[in-house]
Length: 269
Image (cartoon, rainbow, N blue to C red; front, side, top):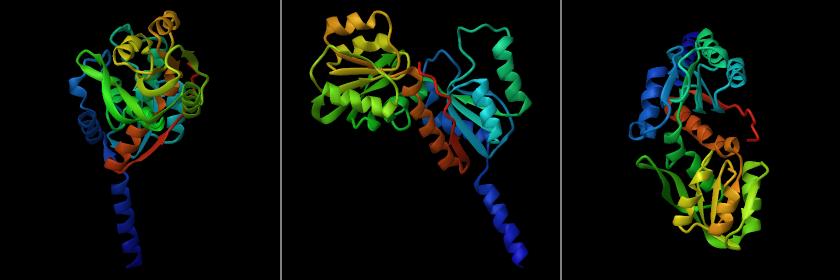
């Protein structure tokens, strides 16, 4: 009887920590409402692996290093923000593109990628999670891209000095900042679009933000910030986009009853 009870218990445990690939894809696509976005990459499944999923590994960007480290942890599925399929890439399967596809297929690991839908989501999205980590409240969408607002504006309860807020940003991202303090001395209204969105600084100007935060800085950015009299911070493309995919992985794990872990493959850019 004890052996029987033990075997039943282990069977229940296996059911609890396993889900099908198709169920995960369906749930995540619906959760992120991927159909409403006009993106320059396919969102959702990019490489199909095994149908049974027990362990999900999340990471910011697809790479052989991420794939290898995920395989070492017995991942069945890899979840990323930056996948391997983009609208402007060559259709020839060669070089690093071939190596990535071959590695995933050889080890039957699925690859799911969510780009703009993960930027924009109000719960697990890059911009919303960053805003909350920075202590911003009363979030409102901004930075329209082809019909969808992908960024957020948030507010502090009380205005604080630019230096104090910049110190907070550096603490959250653990990365050296490109910092242009050309706006107000006190910060309260902050616009955020993570990643490579330095060109959207003018959207932050139009929305009367005290500060605009993104990941990268372009050559024209310094003079735009100076002439428009707005504060600007770039905290790194990778570092500003590592929180959303973690939050999404945790959400899927809770809903689908599977394991999840985030693998950090640092990139200072």
